[in-house]
Length: 220
Image 1 (cartoon, rainbow, N blue to C red):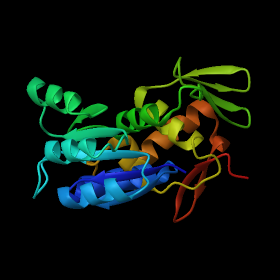
Image 2 (cartoon, helix red, strand yellow):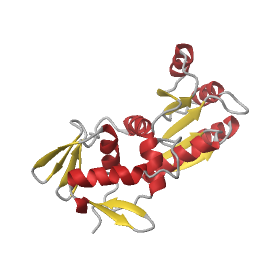
Image 3 (cartoon, one colour):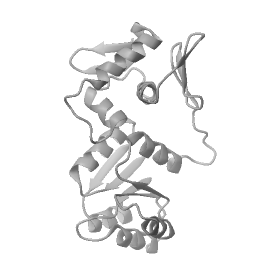
Image 4 (cartoon, helix red, strand yellow):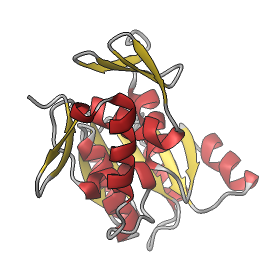
């Protein structure tokens, strides 16, 4: 299981990223200041670091420079509201492996995390499945037995989430956080609306409702 260090002082974003990564099988540690980020990066055995630039004590660039000078080779993805070309170039030339600007959608961040963690000899799965239901990540189409189903962008992201966790019950909060991002309204019924839409396209029995808990695909 990959271990990811999150260095982010904004509690809402840190929680959003932590929950999303945890739901996708990653072990996470959250640090809210630059000095703590340096300490953990130097002493912890992490597979990847997510680094905010606007930290309360040390600038993220200083954190990055310090760990690279200490020969820490852990991949670093910068997460920041700074979207200027100058900052992007400074981050990448300073040793970051990727640069993601806020606000961002979790599925984009997750794809970048997986890309950085994927070994050269480990091909990424292109088809996810549960029983006779499958999802082609390249064509972004679902298949139910021998029937092909076209999906909207949001339906695709929701079904991908379910199929990456076959049999696991996902709460509405987990789904909202992953598919709609950290600005979601926790009182929204949008999850139920999209689950109904997927059921109409895939079959009513493809997505199970677990009362009081959430939804699941591939649950016996």
